[in-house]
Image (cartoon, rainbow, N blue to C red):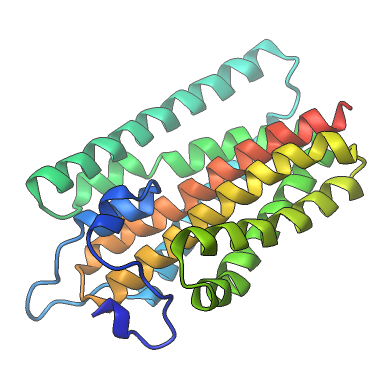
Length: 259
């Protein structure tokens, strides 16, 4: 079972955690069924391979968006970005529908689930590429901050979760450990200390919550012999959380730069 996985995070006890958790990854863990006999089970390595596929799709949109769609003053550029964002939003709503269907009726991801949810990555990649071309300083800080949160998610947040036995206290300690690096990066890029601190606290709290839940959910599925087909949903959910963080950080970074 998940609690016995070597090197895994300490999982909150009971199914109530899966039902009350807010991240997309936790919903994936809640609806993932057990692997049929004789078929490959859910694994962390499988999630990493799917992450590489989705990451490549995101970069496939990011590069042309950064190289060509950077002039936000041109009307046709705005129109193209809006079109890509709408397609990406449609893909997100499709994923929400599939998750609800799996939760209520069971089943497993198939071709249409993957085909209709894949556009999220390149379409939003185009939008973020255009944002990077238009505001390279802000977006450079944004991606550095996301890198800090990713490092936290795969390194010290695990130790915080193991050392602090109460779930809420573990989240609070993890959030505090993410706030300071984000705040220092903000100051490095010229933000005002007092104006940056409130949203750095919000970003640290949200980032720690998402990463802890994502890591818990991945370990839960990997340790409980869940269906390997749900690795696609887990990889999508993790990148979606990162995209949401990038969007929040980009907004905060723009506000800080304007101070």
